[in-house]
Amino acid sequence: MKDVLTQQALHDLLIDTGLVEEKELLLAAERVKNEGGTFSQALLWFNFISEEDLGKIIADALNVPFVVLEAQDIPEEVLQIIPEVVSKKHCTVAFALDENGLRIATTHPEERELPDFLEKKTGLAVKVCYATPRDVQNALSRYNKNAIQAFDELISGDLEAAQSNGKETDPPIIRIVDTLVSYAYQNRASDIHIEPREKDMLVRFRIDGILNDIVKLPPTLHPQIIARIKVLAKLPTDEHQTPLDGKIEFILEGNTRVDVRISVIPTTEGEKVVLRLLSERSRQFSLTNLGMQPDVLAKLEEAYKKPYGMVLVTGPTGCGKTTTLYAILKLLNRRDVNIVTIEDPVEYDIEGISQIQVNPAVNLNFSTGLRSILRQDPNVILVGEIRDDETADIAVNLAMTGHIVLSTLHTNNAATTIPRLIDMKIEPFLIASTINIIVAQRLMRKIHMNCRVSEETVSEEVAKRIGKEMFEKVFGEVTPGRKIRLYRGKGCPACHGTGYEGRVGIFEALIVDDAIREAIVRQENASVIEELAIVSGMRTMFESGLINVQQGLTTIDEVLRATTE
Image 1 (cartoon, rainbow, N blue to C red):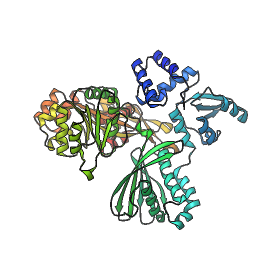
Image 2 (image 1 turned 180 degrees about the horizontal axis):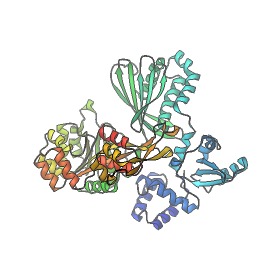
Image 3 (image 1 turned 60 degrees about the vertical axis):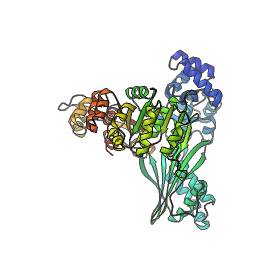
């Protein structure tokens, strides 16, 4: 789909606003010329401007209101005013109906065919608004029924045939697997868990980091569904006792591509499968979109722009470490920079970057891969994870010899990274001289804005939960009877009754300055290093989370869950 404004018109508007620099616009134009796509897509890909700011500028130029559909609670009866097939064809969604008439959001408000038709059909005045293409596409998914209902209907019609035929290539089995992936994507799930049990087969989706029970299927379908997934992933269907890994590419409705990583393991009840969904939607690598605060962003930018040294991102599995590193790579990715990565696995292909997949079968691990990378004349090296002493030693030596090295470790916070590296037999003076920054992070759920409510809470009660010192640091003085306003999601069908939708990162950035270098060389413990970092201006993840609470983005319960689990 073409932009609603010409490239030149959009270029001139952005220059006038001063939000995007001329050199950035030229880079975006070059990407359109070389890679295709639209000018606005290129601007968003580079993260030169936020989607909302771009939408407001375009709407203002077209002299129509701008709307964020994601923030709208669209009644089902309003949505259905425009049939699904028509809505998708015209990229238009009906989102509100009141005494003033019907309001619709579209990516091309200059087109009058559909609004004129709706006015004749309904007898209502139709108000046209502009919404961004991504926002409209997400809103179109609201036409879909919930997963449980969909499976009930699917199974009621096809169950008998699927059970009687017993083949992985039968249409009912194909539809069940396709429906699994489709509804997982529509519900923003990162993973699908298919778990065999004695009396049924449980399907669970991981949404916003939390596993949710979705549907129970008859146990007789389990072998066929597993076989279908194996066939798609080109895995042996006759192997049931060995862990297997594979990949599938699904093309969903609307020509949306979803890469699915497959993991199969044998259990006492049968084979369990986990499908990791890697879609274009999750490829929007942006440090700002991750929730990184400007002060942390500035520290990180200073660190990765140095000519050499290490940038380490730490945290547990699933906290967004890889996404953070990819966002940095995206900013460093220029024609004059040679970037090489070694990963296990390579989650996303990034154009212009040489990516190596770990392969133990041919003795290609992190340490052997790093030795090979050195002979490729790299400027920037990404090591997916520092897992052992040898990899740590090579990575440190690379950082000392004029390379920027990006990597991850599994540690609880930024400060504990130092003793972890010492445990890996890295000399303290090498650690002190090579590490530029350590960023620790977690992901926490955001309150669903459509069902957000506020309530006043006595300051003393909150201080008991988070500590008096931290309360006063974020919320101000604790005084008898003082109340503060906190927010929560009461739960609604759109958020599956959780009160949350989406996730945001919380970060702590430890800059290795002179005081911390001296502490490292003295082999001080993690608590001493953390105190020195706080004195130097580091904000802990807990404090970062509470700032989000103060801003109404999340809850204290969620901050405590994210920082203590």
